[in-house]
Image 1 (tube, rainbow, N blue to C red):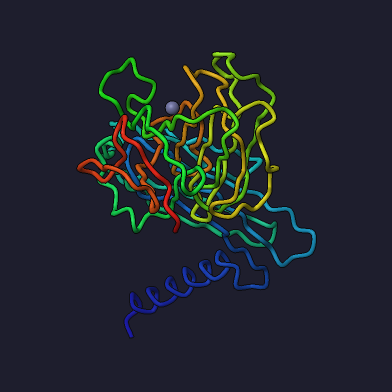
Image 2: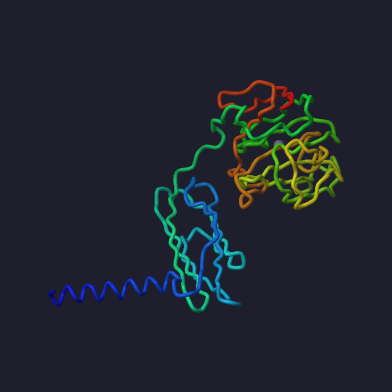
Length: 298
Ligand SMILES: [Zn+2]
C-alpha cells in the first residue's frame, strides 16, 4: 500500500470518529422534537420549534442557532419563525442548530425552500363533502352570508381576507365548525360598542394545527374555557355584535396555524367551505355573498 493510501485511511478514520462524537454515540442521547414548516409560500410564516433531550442526569442543554436573516429566534421557546419576502423566493436557505449537553454536541441542518405565494382569494376549495368543517350555527337554521370572502372593493372588511360573515340575531348558538382545543377567549365587551379591539371571541385549534376564529360574540357569550376540548357541532358561544361590526353577525375565519392567527394577519387565512351547507357555491366552491345557507344534518 502506498503511503498516500495509508494517509487517506488514517484521515478517514479520524473524520469518522469525530462524527461518532458529534452524533452522541458515546453515551449521551440528544434528539430533536420538531414539527417544521420548511417549504411553503413566500408570504407565510415559517416556524420551527425544537427541543433536545439528554440522557445525562440534570444536564442543561445549550443551543447555538444559525438561521436566515428574516427569521427570529425566541430563545426561551426554542422557536424560530419569520416571514420571507419576495427577495427570498426560490432561494434555498439553511437553518443550522447545535445542541450541547456539556458532554455531547449534536448538529442538525435543515434546508428551507421558499416558493412564490398563492393568491388566497382565488384558491380553489375542494368539494364540500370533503370539507372538515360544518357551518358554525345550529342544524336546521338558515343564515345570510352578509359578507363573503375577499371582496374586490378595498373598503370592505374582508378585502384580501378569506372570512365569512353570517347574519344572525344576538344570542344565537355558535357551534364548533370542527373539533379542537380552545386557545383563546374574550367575553367582556358590550354589544354595539363599534370599537376596534373590543370584540368578544373564541379561537379553537384543530388537530392539524389550523385555528378557527369565532368573532363579535355577545357579552358573556363564551361557553367554553381555554384548554377545553370541543367536539364538532358543540355549542361553544352565543353570537353578538361586539367590536368593529355594523350589525349582529358571526365572523368566521380559519388560520393556517397557531403561530399565524391574529385578526390582523389576513394573509394567513385558509379558503374553506362546509360539508353541511345547503346553498349556492362559486367557481372555487366558496360561499357566495348575499346567498342563504342552511345547516343540514351531517
Ligand atoms: Zn367579517
